[in-house]
Amino acid sequence: EAEVAQSPRYKITEKSQAVAFWCDPISGHATLYWYRQILGQGPELLVQFQDESVVDDSQLPKDRFSAERLKGVDSTLKIQPAELGDSAMYLCASSRDFQETQYFGPGTRLLVL
Amino acid sequence: DAKTTQPPSMDCAEGRAANLPCNHSTISGNEYVYWYRQIHSQGPQYIIHGLKNNETNEMASLIITEDRKSSTLILPHATLRDTAVYYCIVSDYMEYGNKLVFGAGTILRVKS
Image 1 (spheres, rainbow over the protein chains, first blue to last red):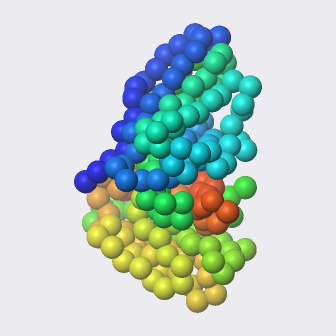
Image 2 (image 1 turned 90 degrees about the vertical axis):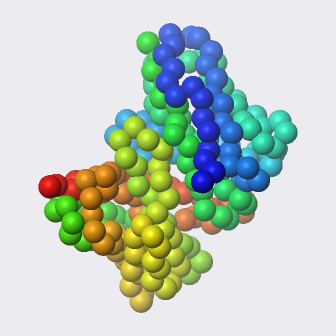
């Protein structure tokens, strides 16, 4: 069964450093999502791509977060500079198209010291 | 904000059916009910979804009331591996898709 891949699984960094997370969606999935999940809460959508275009980044803190999906396949989420409050699980999900079921990857757990 | 209300936690005996309720009284006609679960430290796992009719797959059954204001997820024979946080989500159909707004979910503990 095809799965969403994410790396790294765990990342420890110091505040003010830059971090990047990578996601490879299920093959053929046009829509890709990045979520952030703070401990004890449900995931919150940060950004949504349709192919290579951003269609919703209303919840993305654009002063420090950026996301790209240059060829419409895999995607990178970057934080620069990282802050203590960015410690969370970062989840990637994909769907065949924008109204289809979303499937999540295993996530990247970030700890900012 | 999440459009659903779920109990914070439930217990179930292993081998018994687990019935997880969800209230979504403000659901509109074209919004689906989705269920996901999240086992500790893993990404959410899709379980099932439905619009009006009851649905069943290899994992669970989804019972939606006729007025669509509530639903129940049924795990027919719960095992210890079903211990997880279960999220009931009403999908918010935006111009570009199917926005999932997660609430706090229900912690299901399956006990032997």
